[in-house]
Length: 356
Image (cartoon, rainbow, N blue to C red; front, side):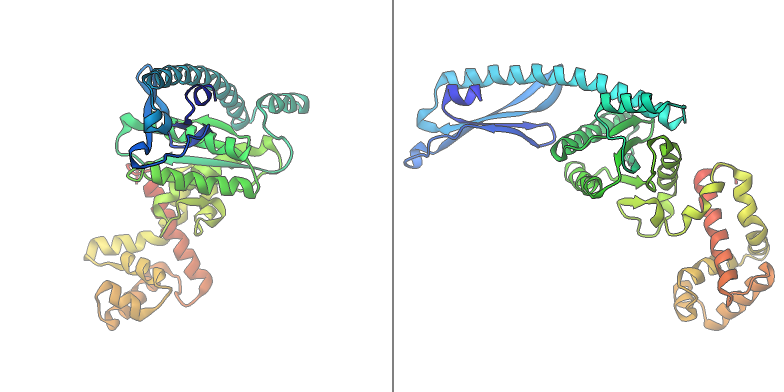
């Protein structure tokens, strides 16, 4: 505002993510082509970090050398303010992170302590709560810290716009956000994923959302759901960019078993091992045939086309599958058990890739 008043121009401040932080002043309209508007933009930097840009616009004929000097000084002041904001934010993130860590570890808290800490951090204690796990899918591990910082900043800017409070905890491979369970939070997350795609189109983002919890002290279980959804993400057919735990295409039913390899083995090995042994011994594809058959919803024609085999060959293989497993493919309940066994095997390969 001071710069706009001093120069008589229009001043715009954009942050590093392209959000307009503020705009002041309005340059006088030019009278002819020679007097068209002139815009000068300078970066806001401190300690080799880029915080955004500051722009001054005014008619070219009215531009003065002192305008450039004033713009540079204003950019320096903005950089100092951003450094101060970063220091305050770092302290706030640390306090939020410590609080979330205690919640995730199930630390007992009295109602008075819980209310006091929520009030100090500006997070609403009432209502239901979600845990959102965010993973940046990058092939450059050295950039993960930088990308996490970008995601944190983007979330903070969006929450500021929506006047939405949140809690945050950074993990080595993902970020955990705690948000109130309402439509505003879901809209915010949709904007978050869309904005990220515009900023980092070559670096996909995976967002997993837990089931809501009635009490903030119950977010420990919610965080496990969100983390589990991230782990199962690669197994889902046409996985959305924003995945809710309840929409995991059946993998949520395997959640109680995901911590223990032996429990996972117990789900699928007794059912599928006869097929695996037969395929290995006779160089057959009974397991693959079963997977494709179930993926095609039991449609024989589509299955044979997908496998490039004759329908008689398919019928023979399906008969072998029923004999080896003891499960009838025409029985919906037994067919679901076979499907669940296949899902359990895929999940084990995902969670314990070197142990199967």
